Image (cartoon, rainbow, N blue to C red):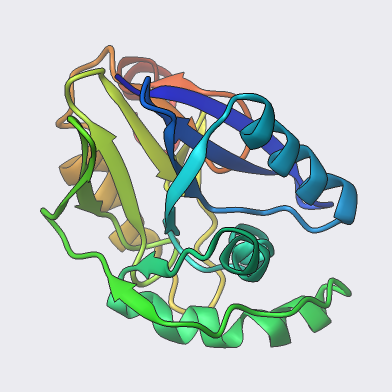
Length: 212
């Protein structure tokens, strides 16, 4: 059974997720740790809970979601998993960092592709890959049907949606992704977003002004 732990990192206030099981195995999703003390906080949590990270996953590769990729790779020996369409976004991230006055060293190790419908196993638990472009061209969400939650990245927020004015973004594509990939999930499904507090599918169907 998964336990979900969220951290809010960097000046962009991005949500980094560690999801782990009773065996002490963990996925690190969208490590946004920018400052040394943020990396130390993440490492301390893993150490204190006796967790072994086994996969590094990106929902998408905008700079605030990839600040910590290189550190995770060097610290834990993990290689990056992402959708093929996000390779171009990953490559652009350092230039984007300079534009935002947030320079960082990008991950440049091996890449492993996540494709729509794939399942990622953590011992007996699994996440399903939902393909949800619009905010970014290769954005994916990680859905746990058994426990009723989705790690949603920057697709759907509490009463908001991801921005679509960045390179590769498209407003209508994003709305279609939400309606066909997320709004088909049970209403009680918890959405752990890339920014802000969690929400549920049912709440957003009822109150999200972009989708009502």
